[in-house]
Length: 81
Image (tube, rainbow, N blue to C red; front, side, top):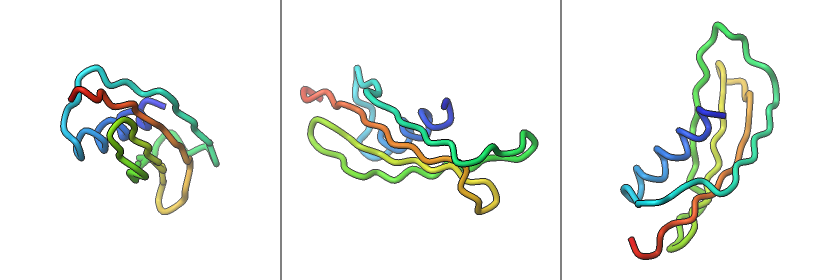
């Protein structure tokens, strides 16, 4: 879960810059298979929509081209920023 949250944060703020008081509002994670503890997991995030007040993202985690998890998250954006 921590990796998913970090990947969402980096993808969004890499796109729009730092926005004060922005926290995630919803995070849904679907675990598809348990990866081995000795392997590195790679997370790739797709920005689905970045609007004026809300951003929606979809990170996926993979292990050697095998999908291990899928998630969806949203960030409300401070309209004053």
